[in-house]
Each structure stands twice: as structure tokens, then as C-alpha cells.
Image (cartoon, rainbow, N blue to C red; front, side, top):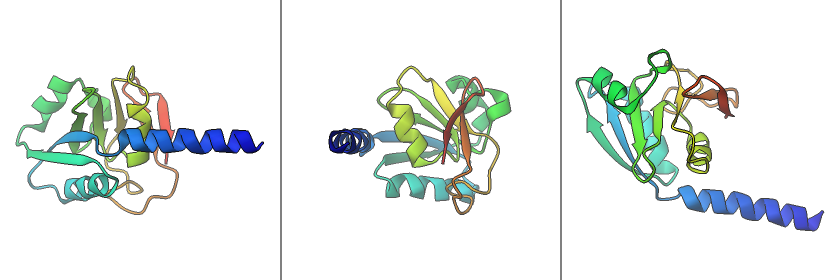
Length: 138
């Protein structure tokens, strides 16, 4: 039992270390305040964020392959892997995405009130992959 607990702790630590300092480019509407809240959440979680204002978010989403039905107010790209993050996805789900390089992208569709940048997290936010399947619950 003790070995299992140590192995679990090491796995969690390695995932966190892998994500720490990861560079993310965020494309956002210059007039959206909740996007700034999400960027702050990423920075507080250890990510290096480059925020780029865009007046044509539809073109950004199309270029990055974001499914229209999963859209939100901002779109981000992990600089190292090219994986895409749509909307108010929590840092924990991004760490999980980084650990699964075959997943092209994840989304928190719309603007959920229980997501970073929008409101208090309640553990019920479901992030989906770009095929619409549940990916993470935070």
C-alpha cells in the first residue's frame, strides 16, 4: 500500500512539473473581461502566457480547427505541442491535455459560470475533447 501511495505521489508530481512553465498563446477579444480572468488563472497556475488581441476570433478558431459547436470567447494554443484550448478550461484539464499529446484540443463550450475567469469552480465543470466526449471534470 505504501509503495502505491508513493507511486501515485510521484506520478502527480511529474505531471505538474511537466506542465509548469509551459508556454501558451491566447487569442482573445480585446473587449472581453472574462478572458483576462482566465489568463490570470493560467499565470497563477504557472503557465507562461502570451495574450494576443484579435478582432476576428472566428478566423482564429477556424484556422486552429475549433469545432463551431464548442466555441467560447477565447482560444489558446500550447506552443510546444500545438494542442488547442477553447474557452474557460481549468489548468488541471490543461495539464491532463499536455499528458495526452494525441488529443488535438479540449473545450469548455460557451461561458460556464463555474469556470476560471467566470466564477467559482465547483468541481462540476466538464471539459470535452474536440469530438464532444467528456475529457475532464474539475
